[in-house]
Image (cartoon, rainbow, N blue to C red; front, side, top):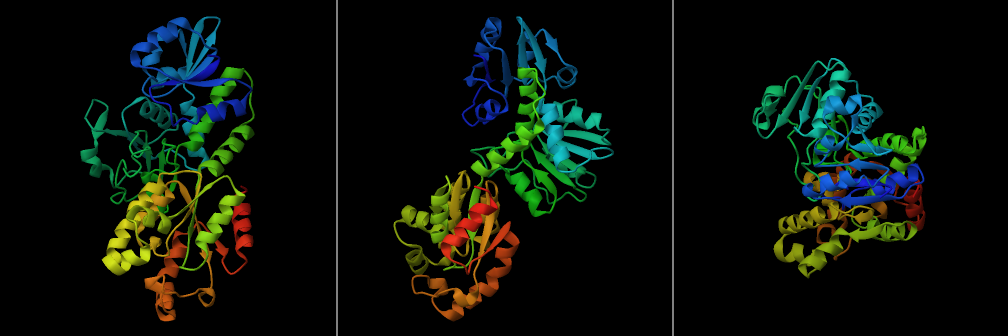
Length: 412
């Protein structure tokens, strides 16, 4: 191996996509069992490697040298082989620092709550100490000399300014989980999560819903890769390349979720947009029909709207875990906050804003089968569309023009 990543499970890693774009190298993913680590490091058959969970602390015993950050944190994510001597570094530290700086958050004199007690939590603690945080508290499942437990989280509701999640809670495929409920925190300013799949964990979505500064771990991932690549290549690679890679990843991975009234053209626009991009198209109503064997109209007429909404959320849970997709929602998907939160984890919402006079009522849609029903729905839902939307487009234009407009908005 020339350059690469070692860890226990790597199938969801982005590292092999990132490093060759930062400098010209062959970069491989190498899954290792714990009992294979020693032989790997005895062979020293690599120029440089990154290390991910669960080996960031375990690899230290095989190294000849640790930089100061690695010593302080007790964690290594980058190893360089220099003439048979192994040098360990912690670029996660710099990546997390870059993530927090990007969001304009200052840690000085802040009360910090860190979820987790592993290697990355040590990195977060060291960063907070360096920036003169007022207090640093770790929470874990079991109490230790240096941590409190989640059962005592209410003790920190009043004073916590910043939360940093370093646990895998909420990571794919368990994207419906959250490390904590944010409702009790009174002075919370910002929330950060090292998880990058999904793009925004449930914890981050909840923080955004509360208007807090917040971001998932994708930017941290790219920035730590930049600092690793500088070590690998022994050159000062421009940060601009990392920023460009981050934007590329977001454009590639993020879903575009189309919301709006029945008959505003979400399905037709979505199909056209999929043709114009490399994204895959999904229609929530069509997926419901595939799952249940009957149309949404029949479900509503035979089983009632409440049953239909449960079925809709079931499908949205599945679709929300996808990436690089166009998702056309049903007209009423936004009335359930859970649907919105789920789809926001990997998606950006685009509201197709079509005037009521240009919408059509039809018997194929029981909830908007007459003008009066359509108007009632419009009045009830318009505020939900606007509050859920990240972007709004004029839905009164030609379908192809709308699709091109959306494509241009995201530079796809």
